Length: 87
Image (tube, rainbow, N blue to C red; front, side, top):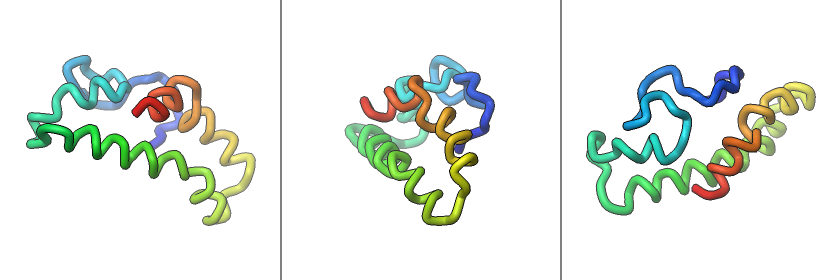
């Protein structure tokens, strides 16, 4: 969920690197949530696929272009987009 702050940190600890907003960090603690084997990567891939369609989904809901542009800097910013594409 975008928080529209762009600081590259989550609001809470999500992995071994604390609140660092990376997929690697999120995946670093998956056993603590009972996610083993390939399942964590499968979940990440599915989330990345869904998030890739955010703009079309929001457009379909009538979100205005200027709001889409504002959100894009947080959802599709180089830092997060690169992770999502690699995810």
